[in-house]
Length: 498
Image (cartoon, rainbow, N blue to C red; front, side, top):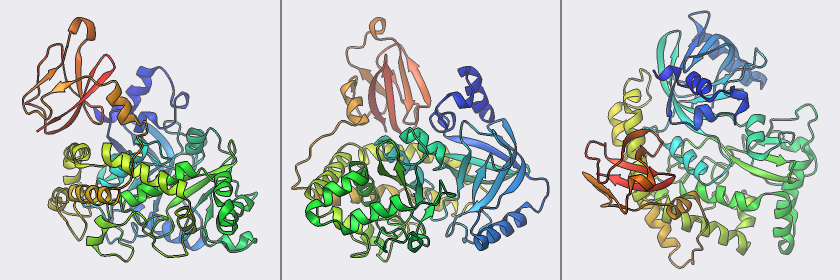
């Protein structure tokens, strides 16, 4: 049944993939896990992809091998470009490499759900296989510019190859969706895009950044303008200068998120793994998160594992070598915005009461796929145990959330938090009352009148329908433990089953 979901979605909607927001049928539906069948014309395809990967590195170019077909949830695409990708994730000793699929590399107008490329990531340093999904879902929730993430079970030449995270590509399609335009310069801050000033010659920046759009024009003057404003503006004029060249309000939330998740394989720590886009509508740069698979304290950046839950808010990886943070932290308005964002998300999202049920639900839904992965990078017992305990020197997910929440709450103890309107708070404003909560058997809905309010539907946090009823109380004893959403006529309630 699952492999026909995408095709059925498009038929029932009565529209083509191009007529909707790109990627919605893949990332914004109730389907968490997709099925992908890749077919190559030869059996030694793995050797070919390996050779192409090495050649791509030598030539600093993308070289794809053409798959005869890719069957995605029952929809067939022919002549699809495939390549191995990554650096550290590629160099792990397993055969399970990360992939990039380019549907238009060899055939024009071969888009999948309005998109040209998709990424399959192997989770090479994550026993829980949840980190990338949890962090990117957090960013989506708060409207930060970041790719969407689900999962995929991947077969190659009819052989189950592995279980992967499925991640949206940051390209012109992404830019158009997020910013309404795609003609500006998009840079990737790799391999060491620390935003330090190297002078007025753009050639001096080629080894630190990658220009991903408008390559033929090759005009880097806008990036130099941003870096010049950041590094060379006198302190009294810094805020005005930076506000004119960067969406600072949005960036502060990105910065705070890397600190919250102790995600140091980022600008905050390693000085890379991000995109910046020159938005032609606003003439400002926008920050786009990328490669968050080492969130929750996996990338130590010279620290001890034990230090990752007590990473201070003003963490500075390399004094003087992260000018964006070094300068912004001196501006009271920015630092206030930073603390206020953390204060709010600790209260409503990043806390055990909210996140633990999400973690449990995701783990439950992907576990059988992970167990059956013939090339999984961690044994199944570590996949299960990393939810609650350190495995392979990688912190447990739930203890990290608890300890990080406690530590940052202490750091913010004297800060006066100003609430902002988020989707969580909007949900509270239209909520219906349920009790007892948590519950293990019966759930009552206060003032429930089926003739006025309609039937009750219960879904898990990913939107999967679990049960429905027209009477109160509901019997929920048969539901797995976790967090659920209850909907009556557009009004939402939330409850925990234990």
